[in-house]
Length: 290
Ligand code: SF4
Image: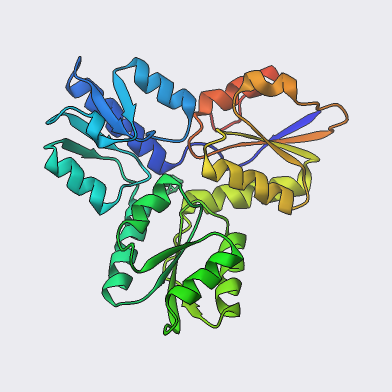
């Protein structure tokens, strides 16, 4: 079986930056718990490693002792969460990815102009919850065609609508929701620099190329990782069966008999050693860039 690895793949600059920030915080105060609001990144292997080094993860700031250090993840947080942290005198260490911070800034700017905002993305995702919190009265999360109609109903006088998106969705999803908004009589417009981040776009482009060469693709990434799930979708939309695999040990559960060319890629929060372990299980060397 020939094995091809997508280029680029794996950990993005935003996740690597968040991990560097966490590592420095742990080194700066040995023995002091580093409280992390939500999972720092959507990869359980990375999270377990940080936990072993003194990090604790919570989904509610009320669980953190007053005055303690709290790390905000690459996915960003809402202004309400920042206010809650200030009220509890928490010492904030902010690992929000600059690409996510850009979407927050756009949301504030469009809301200040009084525009309704369609936020294309997945309801309940940490990044979406953070951006939504910038202007909950002006922003509606648009994940489905029905959501476009809901936005239309909520802003019956509106003609223009700003369209923002989660950084890790696919361009196909943005275009589909753009069409849905037009279909309900709205005129959506996008910011000059689009919100899908460079890392997401490059990894999706690479897996699309891989789909043209492989007859099966495995995406190494957590089931909670939005960008990893999008890689599966992009590969399948390009005509190649694709499967998300959380760990190299899970390989046995997948029947690769009959596969002549196997494509591999990994999500933006997947550590490179995990991909190397998967390649080793397949009897292949690490990719040349390693
Ligand atoms: S996927 Fe993009 S937005 Fe998310 S952390 Fe990585 S670089 Fe930042």
